[in-house]
Length: 394
Image (cartoon, rainbow, N blue to C red; front, side, top):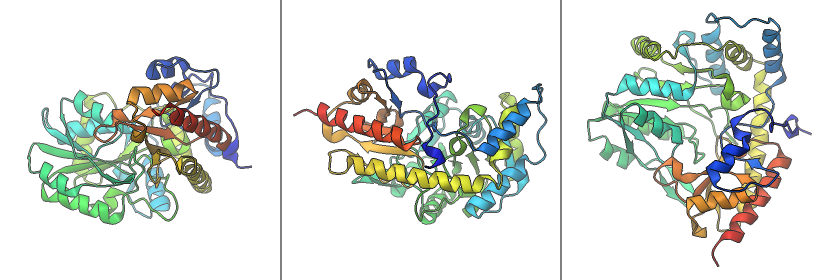
């Protein structure tokens, strides 16, 4: 039995993902006694034992004062880039942030002025939209192209969009949430070329970079454009199931851009450190984690294959899952609106994310979190498939 088959009871953990009141309000459904949350991107696997040991050792010190910045923080991030992706990043490039989305808020203020446009390749992670609008900027959508559930970038559309000089920044999601694409080196080179020609900055969210399947490989954006004044954001939160520890980082090779990023972060009082987050970060980005992550990705790949087989031969089309643990399910053939899709699923005990929140191209889709033990996933998929197919108009 795999270590990832172990069920961890989270129903009384206080975690957002398993909060019944929030799920009921979100879906408008009366939830049954047994519920399978498949919405927020938060895995149901225990943290690796060596990470838990590091955390227990720190807790045993009994006092949690203001932490100093660990001297090896940047070295930990650089180690992970080298060993997981074969890219040499310098330790001084790493800047601590309390989260990838916090880093995105900083970057938007750094690269743009109020009223200017930020390009998003939709459908895309919903918090990208709020990061743009809460900063007083404007969303400029560059919808992905889709054929039979397979997505690609619309570079011609991007060229046209960047003719407007007020569109100053592109936010890349790599690997892409929610459509599950792992962008190839050629795709990233082409995207970067378009942005460089138009003088547009790129910020890359690479939080799902470790979770890539089969023969595919994640390519860090800055490994292709090391001289570009751009930045990429990541965190061990998704891989090691510890987003609540609020510890992420930006990699910024350009020293002046790095200084300015830190200045904006300080102006927003976002430079604070989390004692346990720093402990977990350094334990996670260490040699002991490499085999654990390999086992995790193999397990998740089998979960993805199970989900694809569940919907094969039905009107429900699951996009090929190349990376992330988030399946993207096209339910438009059922003729049900987003609210009905969510309520129908939740009434049977399965709570996914509704696709409409992800912008153009998202309506009529569901996003499913597959990061859970196989027995839990099999039960959830069976319930979801039956609920959706039975709800389809005759």
